[in-house]
Length: 516
Image 1 (spheres, rainbow, N blue to C red):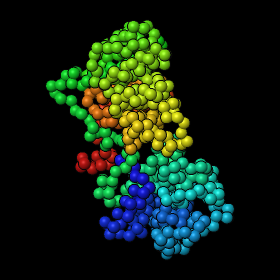
Image 2: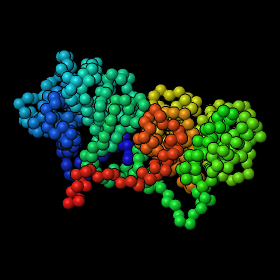
Image 3: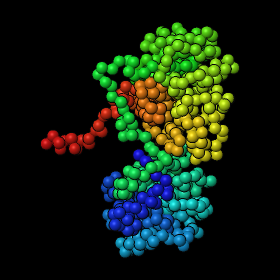
Image 4: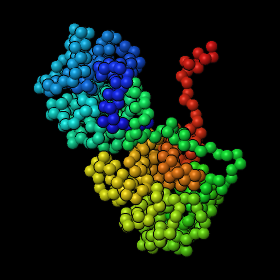
């Protein structure tokens, strides 16, 4: 699913009105009806007090359409106009006149001076004050109004975007944004729904189809893309009947140090479980017996040193190398890694101490093969790119690093974001159970396993990140968040693959009708 910029959304609205031969007012009516339908299906006429707060721009116009349809269907509605300016949009004025023609209870004008209307915690607030066009700081009185929403503890539904939030930057004052329980976003989600600095303004979000021109939606390229099952399923490579283990590549996992051999064990198991035909592990001598015992499916090569890696030397020709997990940052290890990078030609997936070494010695970045995959957690990322002011600044810094060295960066988080060149790929799977030791090592192994099988580096990353998160989602159904361990993610990988081909369950009513 594409995530459109503010400018692209405006262009989509314009093209839709032009190609469908409708006015912007008619498009607003369509959008408002879709919001009303969403509410009506869930409320079924329940007489819960609904407070609709409308601004005087197009988002306010949407709110007036919703309020009008709620009123005509007999809901308990109070409509308010946040009237802090004289710059009313044309479509707002049209719908203001329409609602006055619908009910004797005209919208209440709030002139940004009086006391706030009383709201009970069991009421519903519909937030239609500001939309994506907001380009200024919110007035103090409006800030206090938004704080009044939060204090009331009423269920809050935002139309398109939480009022006060920007689409392309963070706010200076978090109290100047509506904190919504749910946001209904027109046609596509907003980037701010997925960033740590701004996702908190909407606990849940949902896309509402308002009939934007299909050709525009299909052909318009966006910087940000949401990655779910529908996006990764076409990437899947089915296995051939007469294939063999050599058909699915050889992954080499390099890492481990005394006390941290478990990291390489997890990565190697994950590489095999994701589908690599062969896996070899390169570790210090102290890891030999552990790996040969715990993972008989893998082959093992050891360094001459008992405790750390001092010389990365092997005779095999792997299709991909995953390195850095449990590696340590001893001076001898750093020297060994630099020597290795100077001669290596194989694709790389780098994590953990491999990243920390690159951060200590940034000149090594230029030795990385094109489309090397880096998988930093937040602190490792900070060491690579430096501190950032906010999430938008972080994305720009990561994009710059990706373009400079032609590498793929995976920003691990609640919505893991893969960055390559100009694009952000936002993952939709995963859960808080992944906040546990070893899950990053598992991801490294999965990505190495995918590349070994012949997926190109970007596809392998997007597909692998999706499977990693989906495995965790499946595993917590039996384990819950707190008890999830990295090994459980590996064990659920097979179910994650199978889940790709599962059809959504039909509602019970439809199944009964089909039997008749």
